[in-house]
Image (cartoon, rainbow over all chains, first blue to last red; front, side, top):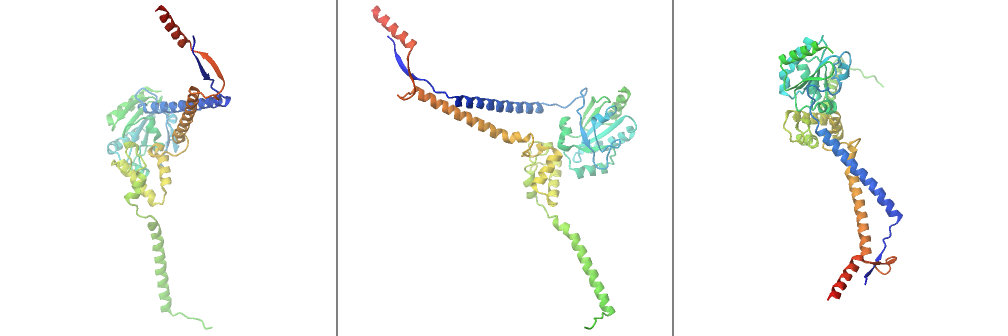
Length: 197
Length: 175
């Protein structure tokens, strides 16, 4: 004895198959795109400050009016290869920056004829205030605004002042969080100048 | 027609009047830019500041941020408003100087466009697939409850039901 039932065969048209196939392609593209964006976001958020021993991230600067370096109104880190670079992040609203302003200028004047470059980058500052600060402290070494906050993002600074001392090969030698001291600047610069390239 | 002749006194008076007029015009000309720079109150500044985020204190809008940096930024907004700049011009300035991330609503261009279009595309694709799923579900329901006109009919035996019946018959035969 056997039981019989009646069933109807599903009618699947070519149109249905095509639309489902295209739908799958689009949906997978969207899913992969969203995952890629998330991955990119995670990678960016997990970036850490470049530390001593790491290659210093490249940066481009357009100096403030009245400032230049070797006749250039704009330059980048690559231009400074072969020189010790003292990269200082500061802001006119930063009280601690004012404590080191005179020292940085004095050190620049001391070393400017050696293979040393001092570079100041303003962080989240208002241009008229930054220029007034430079005038107030009689800062003569090249200074530039951080347009688009790109340089401070690449160096992952967590505040100001922060100073990166970079050797002649473009490798970070020291990261100073907070104001620099005369002893630190002199010791580090002399040591890096003695190293050669 | 007789010619009008001015006395020395008249000439002096006219000269004085001309000087007074010129001085008045000069002072008015000086006053025009001052008049154009209208006084901007805090509400006008905060209307823009609430849509700007200073990188120093992330996730705190500029209008409520109490740091010195944010105070400077608010003053900059006030200056730009007094110069007659529009909200859009001020946002563009901030984006150029400090990056798009300082704006609550990033400009709809370049990579930022994905942020605006992405969710809409994702919702559209989701709706498409949901509608397809509903169609398939509806079709399968129709298959489970066939009508006499529901397409070609085939006869099918169910092996499981057949086994079950056979076992019952065997058990009955034993008795």
